Amino acid sequence: MSESADTRDVIEAASADVRFADLVDVAGLQAMMTSFHKVTGIANAIIDLDGVVIAHAGWQDLCMNFHRVNADTRRRCIESDTSLAASMTRGSHFAAYRCLNGLVDTASPIVVGGRHLANVFTGQFFVEPPDIEFFRRQARQFGFDEAAYLEAVARVPVISQQRVE
Image (cartoon, rainbow, N blue to C red; front, side, top):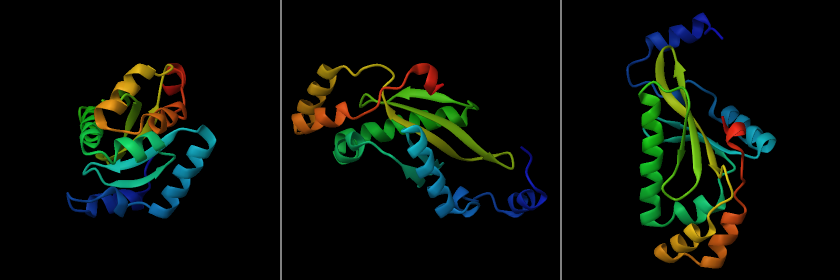
C-alpha cells in the first residue's frame, strides 16, 4: 500500500521527534484494536518506541492483575517487552517471544515514511498448554494468591504456533 502525498508531506515536514500518536486518530485506532480483539480473541496493543501504550484491548487478568502490579514481575514484563521491541529495531518484520513470566507475545513494526515509529504487539497467550507447576511456583515466589493466580492462568488462551505466525 502506498502512502498518499499528504501523508508523505506530514512525515517529511515533521521533526525527528514525531510520535506515532500525533499521526493517527487514537480513538479510531482504539476502536479498531477492540474490534480486532473481539474477532480474534487475542490481546493486542500498539506501543510507541518510548514504551507509551497508544491503544490496547483484551489484556489478560494474569498480566493486569498479577504480573503488572507486582514490582518484581513488572520488571520481568518490561524486560520482556524491551527484548521483543529490540527485535523490531534490528529490522525484523515479526518476532515472537516467551516472556519471563511465562506467556507468549509477538510484535511487528509500524513504519511510516520509512521511519519505525511504533510496534503492534499481540500476545498474552500460550502456544501449548501451560506448565501449571511453573505457575504454581511463580505464585509462591511472588506472593500471589495461588488459587486466584491459577484461575487467571486457566483463562489464558492456547493458540497454535501456526495460527500465531
